[in-house]
Length: 311
Image (cartoon, rainbow, N blue to C red; front, side, top):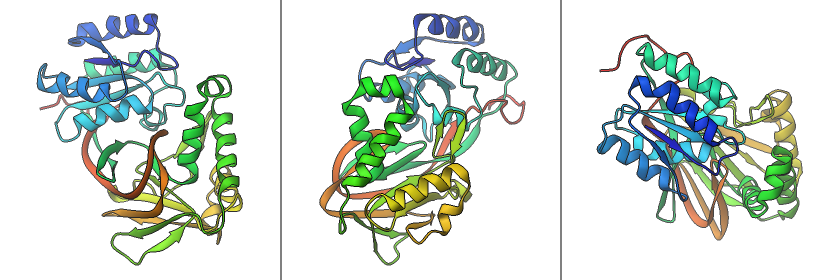
């Protein structure tokens, strides 16, 4: 089954027609359209439980794919995220072309060959009792404040795209004061304070055009979450991290940056409440959050793995 987010940047009727044309001979049951935030989770669950779909194709951005992933993890059905959003980090991480029609053609070829999906580890965050899956990254503090700013001005996002997110991040960093931040514990270890915290389950963290933004190179190693934080308030830590991520990994040696991996959990505490984002979507402000690896999601990669039909 195909799930389409009609609000996505690249989604249009011609693209849906193309998906139906190439996937219908391969067993496409239906094309369903999301109507609100969170709807892709409901539709993906229905696709598997009611219709027995072995593959759920999302045509949207990272948010749509993450919603579907939340329903598919542990089911044995695979997620095929097609790039119809603005950046499409998860789809591109899996090797799919940036052009959605080309990606659909490749997917059709993989399904026709009976290519087996791969199993990946993604992320889960529980914040003040609210649960959310993330497939690329999540964070509190500066990047979450930036996500809030971007969502408040959708016209800017459409017109200047990633440059607007970079500007929003700089503004969020400038607003931080000494003493702001969160208390973090990694795998039950001793707590420490950070000005902001970013968590990733895969790499790269994002893309700037064709260039990968590899903010947390340790993400995804052995099914672990990678994390990185600014050890000081203000713009110095974020500026060092951004420059290093775009030109190499030298930011990991900076005293303004803290980083590592978590095999079990990352716990965050904030007395005043702090902004939280997951896959670029602002979720609100929270006092307590726990980030954990989430295993058991099957995904279709470009080119696939073995050419063996799924059991």
